[in-house]
Image (cartoon, rainbow, N blue to C red; front, side, top):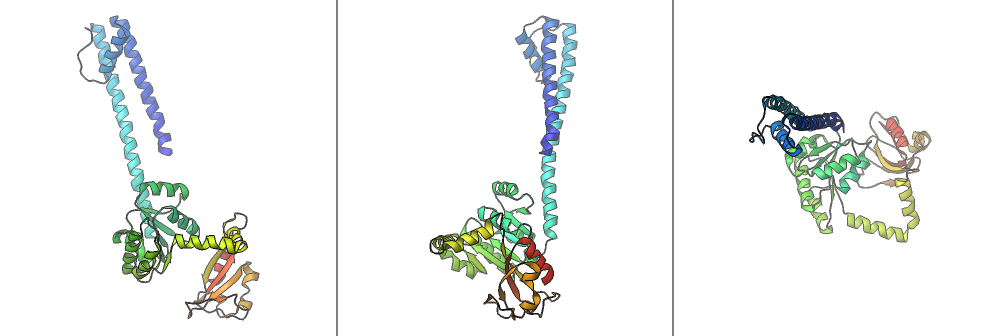
Length: 338
């Protein structure tokens, strides 16, 4: 840590100076006044700290002069020590204030980002999935979770606050965001976040996590567009491992292996896209990007998909193309689609 590297030598020099004063005072009283080492150490300590106790032994004129010099050295040491300590505290506090201010300025400039409420295990995994592709802001009020998140994702934009408060959501850019993920530790908190977010931003996409299966319907009624239950998802995955192990193994390798990092992604066809109005055959998506086109969702049919679309499927503005491939291939497709 830079601050420790800056201030540690100063504190070490302060301790060395104090040790030198104690040694000089002890030796001086032993030689000048001819007293014992114990009495000399005690006299040196009460002189350096200026506590004002009674002298341990009568002082000669030379001893008084030596005591005054020692006293000035002690006052100088205390001034230097407290100056360093105050400077350290001020710089630590100022650094934290500047960091928060810089983070808030970056959040104020964000648009079409995702707000993640909660930095627990689920929140960190969501942030990792968004990292590099989608701007996001994490809201968390537990300093321990924030510290863990910073170790996990040092570049993450984190707001310290309670996501159940409206003003915190607004400061996180709710009115400019494209989506919100409610993954707090309690279902009641996620329910409250959904209610607040839907009331403040009617068109935002809200994804909520439900610990209890019975809470899922309530979250939908509170305004969530999608509700995910870890218990239900885990049960489905466990059953799938038993009945279709090859499929699950392929998906695990395709999406989690570092050697074959594939992603499923959706890309919306913009009015400026070169493939707008063309068919899949004419678009040459696999040939141009190496991606596999899995499905197409027509703009006017938001509830259904055309799985394994045929070559003459026409791509119109507003349609969504679902593809499977590597990150660099998806980036190439975005350049074509936008």
